[in-house]
Length: 250
Ligand SMILES: [Zn+2]
Ligand SMILES: [Zn+2]
Image (tube, rainbow, N blue to C red; front, top):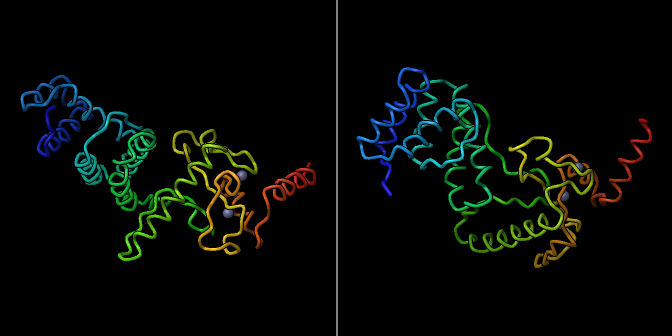
């Protein structure tokens, strides 16, 4: 396999821009890159992905990390914040598309994306549920020196519990059946909060989560309502409240 160098990436970006503007034919661009030792197939991916970024559409063939950064940086310079917003959206769709089966590569890409989200004015990509007392996040990185090991262990346990819970109950709200994928398409895929049925302050620190018995996936709306009182409403109580409310407004 031929390595795609930084120089290749920089050249590809310029060519992709020209192709996008209709100033250069794709076949000519591919020929130029071929002369520089790239296969036409890979060159085509890099040129086509630029177009998809400009249109805010997800791309499926992976770019190297340097290329993603270079493209985002220069799209921002050349096309301003609206160009950058489209490109950021495109990378997000790409991450969602590949999120299932290349977890290892995602943290670098996600950090990069967060940086450019901020620049483009889209705000930082926030992990689900930081304002809820019991939400288990699946993407938190702890780096607190001595405390690190303990945090990492707890985190891995929690992440596993979250996974088990979702495997059993799916990405669907246990209260109102809301499905983010159905409502929001690609960006809603695999988004859900996870709620502890047991009040966390009421249990010992060493308590072992039973993902099936103790956890339920819930949408952020229902999650917020569950925590409107302490101890929290039960899932059944909240379902009843919604039913009663339907009766009121019918
Ligand atoms: Zn809900
Ligand atoms: Zn909760």
